[in-house]
Image (cartoon, rainbow, N blue to C red; front, top):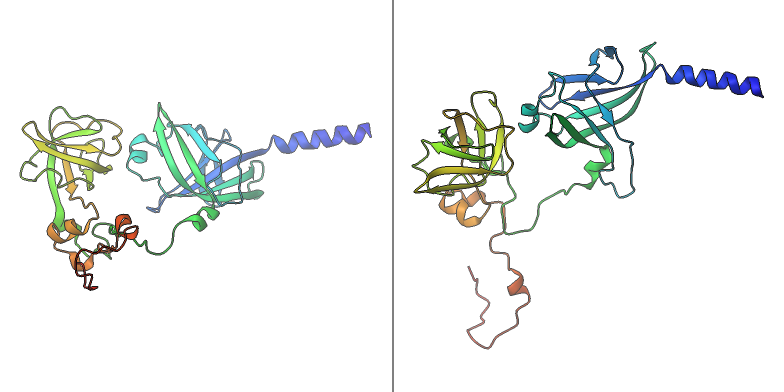
Length: 293
């Protein structure tokens, strides 16, 4: 019994020291990256997995209610493949990820542990943390249309039918801008609120290609400025070119009056509200059943 135990322990130790983890990430733009916690590069099914990326992962968990679970990957922004600017620009959002167990002494011996997509990813203090969503997460997403007053189409998509180019303008960054509050030059002709809910894209500099959702657009005696829903990784330099897309608040009045697109409105603006639903019959008026709108 003693000899068997010693032999088993030796074999287990040998196996444990030849195993490592590899991650293959396939971004939506078609770019593929490989990472490993081994100290040397590995080629896994034709994908070069680079070491020393600081990758680490938590233990995986699954629940019966199809929720996200508790698995995450984390690491340091030490690789040229992972930059804070790319994370802020959303280039890693929704990327497919494969987690492999690999015998680095014989790369033909590898086992796919799980697959998923990268969900919420954040970068701070030189590191990042990404949520890994399993395939079951897709089963917990709403399907079909929502019966609501507001439009459920995305601005300028196939259901909206508007051309985004017709509602796209340019401006430049003015002095005093921060990573979240952008002062504008060349946007004085647009009324306040025109870009609220729209999108900003940085066209030059270190942040070139970075996009952000515009939370509010202010224009007053102090000048024109945008407040972003989420701050950029850094403040854009004065004079940097910006591309701005008009915002839509999903209301029928906005679709009709600003965009002249009421025929393609994808909501139900005449749906009775809560006050109407809980109201009661009144003796005032004709109550003849005619259309209220």
